[in-house]
Image 1: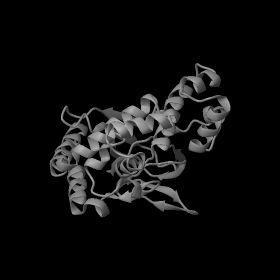
Image 2: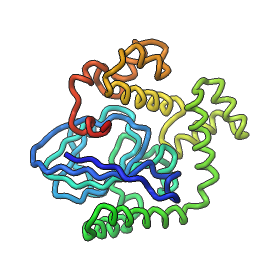
Image 3: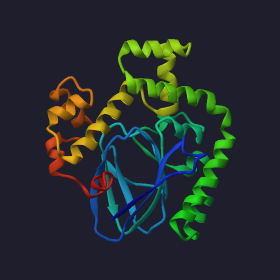
Length: 270
């Protein structure tokens, strides 16, 4: 397996965390679990392999152009065949720039991008298939995203406000601070919650919990600190709260996670 990241251009840097290419040259079937990241993604499948994800009581095949909503709980996936995948990882607030829907409607699901933005998605997918070279393909994505950014330019006021709110939550997620943030923006706390869910799919509390979880996941993967130290460093009251939240996002305790690192999750921390 091969996983590579690419930085966006200066113009798209405030909106795109990174692009990535994932390649697998084995036909072996494997299963994995995706954890909440706080970010939405779009993935173009350019290989012959197929993916499935667990929905309700059975596995469902993913579309060729995947729009990943916010994942708020462990999501089981299954792979068959060889893969070439080109992905766009948005910042928590920024996917809302490029799509018309409220982001919460996509939570815990993988949606066909064609159902969201129409035939332009299929046209882009076909052009990516016909184009050689990773950078050339990324250039096509950049041109596409820049056009959509211009189309939705009027959204910038609200989305910039959401970005500021998220930054403030990272600094202090207490209830009193949420009230202060709302007051600073001349909105009610109820409207603040609705604004965040509309543009990110998350509440202030769930955003804070996922962010702390992701921070702990990176520290655990280094395997050089005791869990108690990680818990306090990530803002948990104690180790038991840390383990409870970690298990809700992964289905595993931190120690079990280390003992069962999967191929995809190992690649994420290279």
